[in-house]
Amino acid sequence: MKHLLVLDDPNEWPVQIEGVEVCSAKSYLTTEDPGKKRGLRVYNLCKSYRYQTLGYYVSLLAGARGHRPIPSVSTIQELKSKPILKTVSDELDQLIQKSLHDLKTSDFTLSIYFGHNLAKKYDRLCAHLYSVFQAPLLRAYFHRELGGEIQDPKWRLISVKPISGIEIPPEHYPFVQDFAKNYFAGKKICAKKRA
Image (cartoon, rainbow, N blue to C red; front, side, top):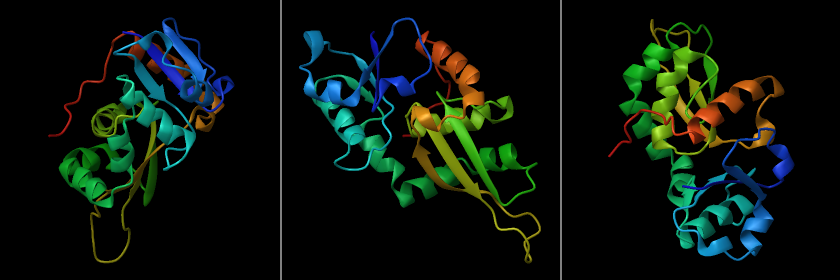
């Protein structure tokens, strides 16, 4: 299967991976389906997936062409849905509490690169969040209420947002490169997608 990374600006992707092509969103949207490639996986790394943005239309057109967009338009909608976030937070509650138990803060941001995080202790949580919100690059935001009468406050998933290549801190590039290479080599994330 062929892999295509689509970005607003291909120069934003600092990683060269064998067997993976990179192109601009404008090029993908304005060029006729090259070779009518059915089964092409289109990894949408655009800056925004909001309605009427390049990112939204890349996923929409990829689906219409018979390609497999990641994220799909349905995933883009799920990322904005508060009820789905609450359901996911409830379903993953035990894993969230176990993964974030040692943190002393009230807020935590988890970067998810191809289903992984730089800190291996968060990989299980990352894999589960990736299985629900299939987008290559994500940030998950968690919060818990500290103080008051609650002795052991619970962490809650507040939001999950896709990020673009330029939002990756430069010091993370070597890790992202390894995660991406493993991902495209077929070493997929092992977490079951919820029903």
